[in-house]
Image (tube, rainbow over all chains, first blue to last red; front, side):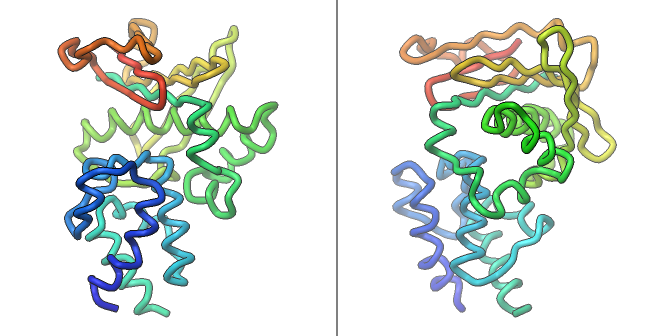
Length: 84
Length: 154
């Protein structure tokens, strides 16, 4: 799965928890969930659970630690998909 | 250095479904989940523990410059004493002392790495629409904002 395909699948998940903003409209690899997208930290867990469901992967706590940006999330998703 | 975190309980109720499958496992240790399961009010206990972790993280992040999302690495312990909810959060070998206030509409925790400092922290909590116009100019030691509430500590 390419980075673009992953972002395409991530966008609706992120949109559920992020308030409407220009940063959300211009979602890209550099987007930071908290700093740019203003996502409440308690909702980061929801994003991770939704990602697990959407991609059919399990994200352990060590991998979850890094998932504060779209870029880091793509890396974790790719890693977990390759382990399937 | 001080930290603080406020949780608007009404917003938390609609914003986060902590009963969702897998949710608690990603945030809380088995010991913390036992505290939640045995609490008189599970909803309240979830946000007490969460605000403790957030308040401690805000200091730890400044001390270590580590930015991550590892809530299970922040281990809470709690003690009730004279109606006060005192506790501590340990992150590896670093320990932060906390004090939490539970009100009908919000939960607020203050944190500090120095035990004696906890009683010296002054707290100002504003609820909408009575927020200060330019709170950044007040130079608070730590700012927390959730829902209707803005909490500043000095």
